[in-house]
Image 1 (cartoon, rainbow, N blue to C red):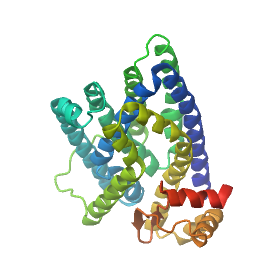
Image 2 (cartoon, rainbow, N blue to C red):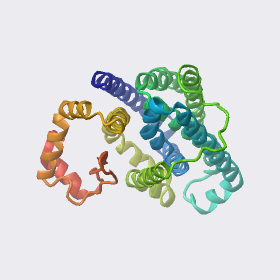
Image 3 (tube, rainbow, N blue to C red):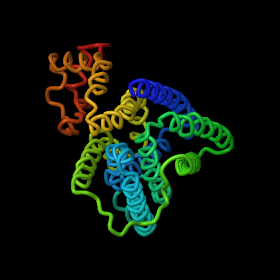
Image 4 (cartoon, rainbow, N blue to C red):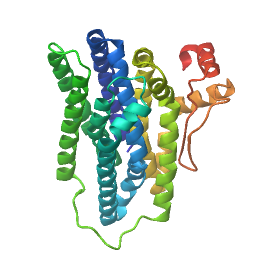
Length: 353
């Protein structure tokens, strides 16, 4: 198990670095062509789409990552029924969102995004982007639950990211409207989702099975899903709230400038998130199986992370910050902040962070 975790972590880091580097050059290339105002519109669209996909996810990806590794081992039928019900919920929510956006996009454009001209076109595109994001989050959670990070990186990053980059350079040789970049994103995201879905359904648990009328979610599963859902919404607002407010209250050029400033910090967050992607299902599976020996071994293998946390605590780095995710006996997550005081501490501590 330890060797598997390390290998999967390496794939996750590789995908993060590759995606971040290519994404950075694409962003610079696009901003040079479309300008900061159009890029600000794209950043506003991205923040809105991320908000909607976070709200509509209902914590389903976290539910899958925590419980599927355990049920695959002891009750495969129950694992299949959980996955089937998650897909049904996601489908219903996606269809509802599409109907709402097509009905109220002009109203949202007129009364919410008053500083952005013709934002209704972007809102209509979110009707495609958000459902794709919801199902992508679900299928990636399924891959994570069976420790298939390599496949996510291969088909979700190493294949799709170059295709997106090539299409972007080709299309923007002839056009300078950022809407075309959203078209490219929707196409490549859908392609990635279809590839991952087909490969998963072929090689692993079946996603399309007959409904069991007697199956219901356990109370503990519902409670955990709701807790993680609340945490994911809080995490979104702690990271994206300022971008969301900027896109509503100020002209898009300011949102574009702020988006550029966030690029470097985004690389660091990508690395952290991908490490969490690998370790969370592994710890969940070991904890459920009461495999104390391997948990102890994993704990020893992460000595540096433990020392890092203790050191920063003694330095007062976490004072005044929020730990947004606390699952007793399982995991804690938090401590990062955009507050001036935290940034000052980060500068004082230096490269150790």
